[in-house]
Length: 123
Image (tube, rainbow, N blue to C red):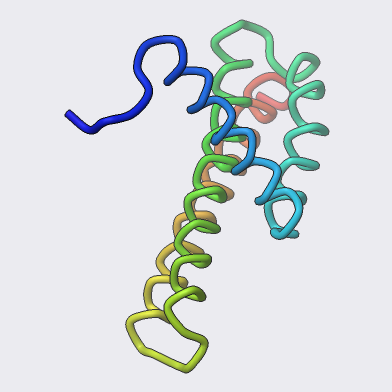
């Protein structure tokens, strides 16, 4: 076991680190701020679009997933940039893969919203 904090002290420290990470991403990543703005708009709209709690969850869960994936993508980009700024095929590939993960989350959001909107208002 690693030395360090345990119990409640560890939980408090981990929460502090997480909040610091959220603040850093908010401050430095425009894409994260855009994803948060999208979520702030769509979560309330989901209350009017969804007809069941399950539909609401299917509309909002992918938004949370998008924020998670954007955080991970930003972490990968930060580490790659820390290693060096010169062009490297593997560094570029890592950044592209992270970007692809964000794209797939956006696709998932579109699919969920189109499906539920279609079912509730046009079918």
